Length: 340
Image (cartoon, rainbow, N blue to C red; front, side, top):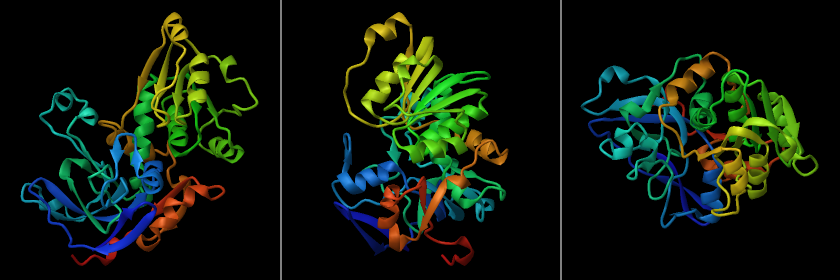
């Protein structure tokens, strides 16, 4: 099979590797679509994200969908031919966090494209059968791959306690901000304010659920009065301004990856009794993602603005610099041509 490998700083090469064989509880998935995440671009450009450092060749890509073409001995062979969206994580089911239902916080987690675990920019990948979620034919391969960023939006909206009639401020109109705006609308929020310093990104937010747009460079974010604030930017100023915009007993959810440490308005958080929390990936979100997309409440297909093959992964990783770009997708193979 063909595999796209990050072999060094800003160096991508195409390799030929054997098609892997599934363990007892795994399925072999022929990959049909892989979304390019900001973390992929960060590993490509910087070689690290926080404590996660690329120390050797790494296959990027964790937003993936495909079709099952092989199964391990403990998996029913009726799953062969099934189209699936991949939940790209392998927790230890015996860890205390997993047993508490928070398997996303498992300290022994193996997550696609997080060093040293290889990701999905390949023609075939293995995943535990329980993390290969079936998708109906009404959902495209590309949308199925984007269940992953959608799951981040779902986890964020759940943490923000968004419900019917809620008001929410979302900082950052990148892919995660846009899916979060759509989820907030689907959950019943009636006021969805999206802030971003880039005019074209603010315009994108209009199409994906925003009821109001804010330019944080010229408008007073702190003057807002919302039930919840979700930061999808990682910018310290956006976080602090957003906290000031939350009314008493509201919720602040930090999603964007930015500076490791910065000052927060502690007195304000105490005096308003704000709940401040983070989001680290997701747990038990794929069934919700499937229903939101199937019902039409969330539109993932319209977020795809560029398509690339495995030979042009480097172009896909740099697509975020193109005007109007939202989400680049790599198409490794077509399952109709499979001959494993």
